[in-house]
Length: 175
Image (cartoon, one colour):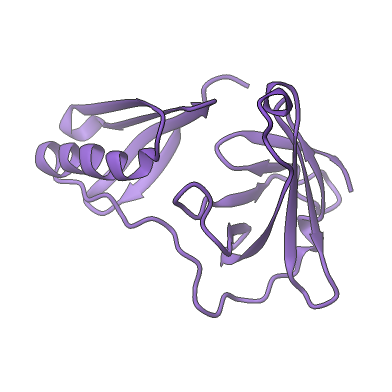
C-alpha cells in the first residue's frame, strides 16, 4: 500500500489530505484543489493538535474559505455497539492490537508495541472504545490530546472487518 489520500467533507467544500507520524514527529497535508490551496505542517515533539488547528485551520479559512471541523468527541451516552464484526487481532510492524467485547457489552482494544517501540519502552495499553459513527469507534478517554477514530473497514468475505484503520491500515490476522 502506498501513500493513501483521504477525502474530507469539511464545511466549505471537499479537502484532500494525508496525515502521518512516527516517533516524536507528526505531519499533516491538506489540499483544496478548487481554491488552488495546499498546506503542509511538519512537527517534532509536543502535542501537535493545537498547532494543527491553529495553522491549518487559519490557512484553510483565510485562503480557501473552508472551515476545519471540530475534533471528534464521544457522546456522553455513546450508542451500544455489537463488536462481533470488529473482534480479533490486527497487526502491523509497530503493534499488535486485540479488540474484544466483555459480557457488559464494552469494547476494549489492547495495544502491544513491537519493534523499535519496545526498545523505546512504549507500554502495553488497554483502552475502551465506544460507538461513534457506523463502523468507526472512539476511545472513551483521549489519547495524546484527542479521540482518534478507529475505523473498521473492508470485509473478509464472511463479515468481519479486514482492517483497523487509525491512520495506518492494520490487517486482521486472527479472529
